[in-house]
Length: 600
Image 1 (cartoon, rainbow, N blue to C red):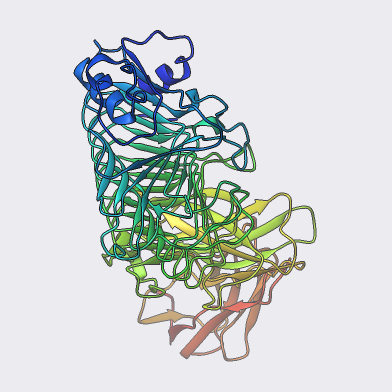
Image 2 (image 1 turned 30 degrees about the vertical axis):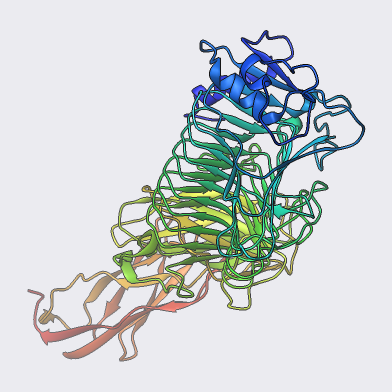
């Protein structure tokens, strides 16, 4: 799943094996006091000291750094029942030596086992004073692990604009997993700031899930370093995954390159869900604006679901398989935002295989200026190069499949990825969102930049629903959603074909003997939207009373003879009356001047 996390991946393996590992140094926290005692030097409580404190344990571990890849262990065995509160009046000592700080070692504590929600029992709470800007910092010792703790900073209502950070990862390859951070109703502030690289917040297993919150203008997770992974967390929602309070301004803020945000629930922000202000990041498999099931609205109240301010990012699944042939995945659910579902100011941002619906404005807004009209040949530039969207003409079928037809006009001789979506309703703008991905196809434009879209979706889309589409070019620029077309039971007729008279005569006068038949070739060609070649016959008339019928052969061509009665100017026109579901159509008139005598 993770193509670039290597040292952080090692931290995951070590964490999974921690129950059977021996640690270089083990120090046990036995006191909730916020002081430094002799334990900071010896690693053991002195008689009558009241026990080792968390400050002691960090200082002792830092003073005795392990030889990589070994780690130290900071365990907990604080006497008493219920949650043990460690109230920190100043920042804790920074962790500079690799250590596992494991709150689940406190007797009675246990990690989460539920796929949805959290039944974690956390019995050690670390709460920072309201004057703090940072509480717990990992500044060295690659591979440290923070797990099984509740970590908060008191919010007195005066730090709305300058909220503190509960956990800061300033070094490489650390893991924050199985914690409740910024969720205590008597504290509320917190958040995780990742300034280093190759760190992991959360993980793929239920036990790895952090429940993360904050309030004010806070960002719950700030990624200011590269190649970090945020996975499987509840961000802005409570431990049930079903509710929360809209306190934080932003769920995840990505300010550095090559990060991944995968499989999280990110909802209940009063601002937006995820802001990407850098390049080469992946936002995949998240539920943004919903509960943990992806169905119940929680929303991101004022702004966007996902904002793209950088380039070369992926929102969804860049390599999803065709859902008809095998399940896709890793698209996001992006719903119930107060503004646009996805806003995009960058280029080469691929927006693929997501479920985007019930947002306040557009599903995808390139340039954040409302619907961006298509331009012939797609030569304009801007956000995602203002990639043209497809124009669907029909979605129909009384049988088990829904037949979808349309066109795409864009750059010539280019192959585009077209994704098709069903929607229970159409956006009030008339331009859709994309509630359910039903298929994807690849189309190649001709010399004029046109490509036909034809697809059959099984099982069929219920009549009365709406179909929309996006187009993505080879560089990864995804369009806005197309206008909606409603699904009907009746197949529409193919569009009128082109009817042409072959210019068998050069421009200018010709000479024919009166009454001599002249063969007139004609062609009837289906437009790109049609699948079949028109059949039947074409009526050819000279405008002066003479006419003939040309029977079409399989290639859509035919010929018949006209006899020009006398010299003069004739306007020859061909009329195709229609056949086999094709509508009728006429050619342009061909003007011919006839002179007495033999043909030149």
